[in-house]
Amino acid sequence: MAPRVAHVSVRELVVLGTASQVPTRHRNHNGYLLRWDGEGILFDPGEGTQRQMLRAGVAAHDIDRICVTHFHGDHSLGLAGVIQRINLDQVPHPVAAHYPASGQRFFERLRYATAYRERADIVEVPVAADGPVAQTPGYTLEARRLSHPVESFGYRLTEPDGRRMLPERLAAHGIKGPDVGLLQREGALRGVRLEDVSEVRPGQRFAFVMDTRLCDGVHALAEGCDMLVIESTFLDEDASLAVEHGHLTAGQAAAVARDARVRHLVLTHFSQRYGDPSAFERQARAAGFDGELTIAQDLVRVPLPKRP
Image (cartoon, rainbow, N blue to C red; front, side, top):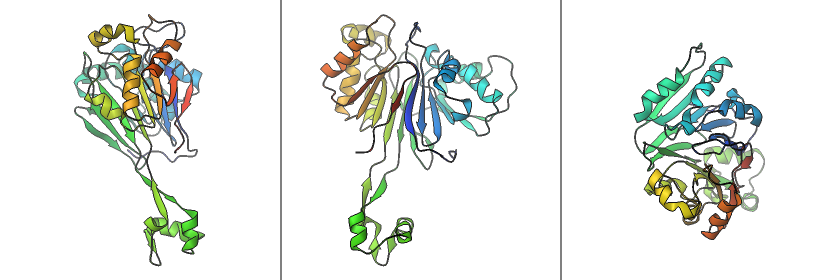
């Protein structure tokens, strides 16, 4: 599915909700919109997502893709409202929906939970195995299986590597003006190769990891990410509960990010049993993560780190 033409190059995470199983006075059920160069990817819309979108300034037209990690209610009950809103607002572009294939019956129940007029193109793209699930000119979206009591997949978005032009080398070869663009398009000009006057610009990487124990999929998704959004339902002192219920602690999530060389770590999906969010920050730092760290709150916007 081709993305719409981007008018403004914005890459940011819009946090719509950060609670785990039970919402609180200050935290809505899950919901996260990744803005990526004019395209919007909505992750795990829990109950109340449609209203949180309104509060955050997110429109149905902003959604090009929906990614559901698994079919527990705090990650998917908002699908009914979001899909109906996409139809009510007559979103003109196709909206792809990715979700575990094993939960097809749940997706259908949510999609058709009540009567409404279908006016939008919702493209169902169920996920059954690890690997790429979508390819666009701007990124590859892949899924990896996680470890939770119901089947769960995490998602990773990878931008292709590009080239960064080096002005001093261009000048040394006498290439300027329109010839620069010609060289970029053709790969060579008057005996000068593109690699002679440029260097690799690594593509950016984003990963979304929700309900899971530590497993190979978590590490594979996180590796080398510019931004990792990851659940930290429990504090470290409740690690046994985390294992029992298929979740991570703050320290475990931060250790994953540390080992994967993540640049910006976003912790979210907090149990209602904890009242002090700063405890999650302290445990993440104690685990040795020294990059950018955000303890997510509802309605905040978190920009992707600028390229090094």
